[in-house]
Image 1 (cartoon, rainbow, N blue to C red):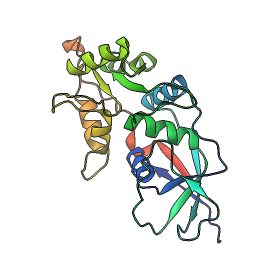
Image 2 (cartoon, one colour; image 1 turned 180 degrees about the vertical axis):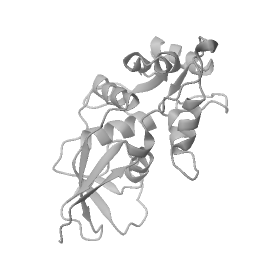
Image 3 (cartoon, rainbow, N blue to C red; image 1 turned 90 degrees about the vertical axis):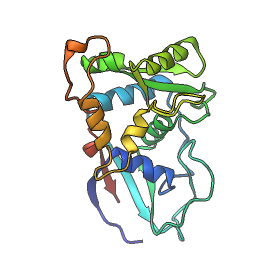
Length: 224
């Protein structure tokens, strides 16, 4: 198999799409997702804050002749993937990729091992004030804290990272909806939303130019 080396920036919407399409796969010899909810939350805080999220090491291969057995990223549906001309083994960065997929998709599965089903929210008031650690919150699905966050979502004071099950008003949106909205630039709607959002508790706070996770340059990708 010919080896090539290079690197490029990988946009967060592209990362999530490629994981969903089974283009990014985990070698079977790697361990599964083991991060606890707080570790996932800390990763989301670093992205919200605009920190460099690190390098993901990938090995490109032909799906018809994989170099070893693979498995899908944790919680990705096991339905047959569409035909692909190429795919990538995730050699380094599996925990970060799996954590992001879980946070933005909110599957009805616990965070392993033997964890709870949890949900992640962005509280807009601390976010717009620059208090990013307070802005990103994780709660067990169905807990009193979770129900409080859903109420904040209804009032326009918080946004869930991923879908929330239940009969919610159709106008409610999630960060995933904004991030993956179609358009000339993936993530542009998310930028526009957060650039034009002011604190729900202090209307005089003014507009914020903060852009969640800088979708254009969240990750660096390497191929080996």
